[in-house]
Image (tube, rainbow, N blue to C red):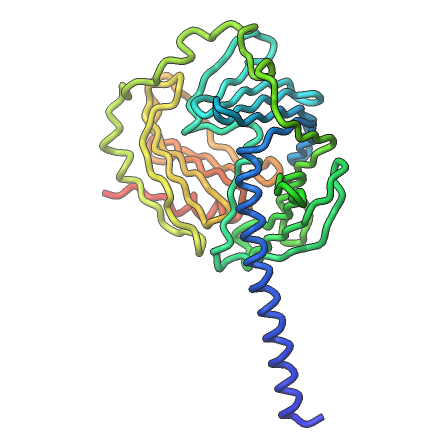
Length: 324
């Protein structure tokens, strides 16, 4: 075979490979849009198992969408006891062993089934997107989508979407070797036309005193100091999507919350100056795909948490500096 012919063949193969990836990206984009709509607007009930590191939970989920909006109920069947009610306005957690309710705003806290509401962009240049065959999950056929990172700063994802509705039936966060760090998979699923209101009632519980009240204005004087903390190194592709200072429910100490996003993965940076009597200790934690690093610097608590490799969390944390 002549050298010229060999080069032409290699170019043809490369062109076909690139075209396949480009076609997959467009097809994956349509599927992910369908998934985002399905998770909010469908009525569905079932059970799923969530595995995070060495911990696992089996949970019942009831999701409804009607004139009252989107509503969701979660209850642990096996694993750490928990019940969660969520609607368009609030997140309500039942405190274990106490029939009390704790109310949080949906804008700042998400439900235990956050994975269902997650949205993935196919516009990132730091991932490749593939259609990866089909699987049978809980009696339904689903299309597998693989989101593969191009560098070591982020994890990959394998999603399995129900063929007709686009509902997420299986989700995995995988490391660079393709091994799951976290997994959610349905064991049973039904798609009723309507979900009865009784599933979303919280009338049987007592309210935690002042649970529904606002956090109020911060009582400390750190608001002038918090903005002086600056981000240093950021992984390629990550941008600041949110930078807000707020007060967490149950505390009068202001917290600055910075959200970094690359279109697929998200990282949170928390900065606060403890009030008298508040104690924090440096720590590093790993829970499945979630990595956390917290330290005390110059009298401030700095915490970085995200569904990315520990090396990424460590590098972002090291870059945090207090400007003069």
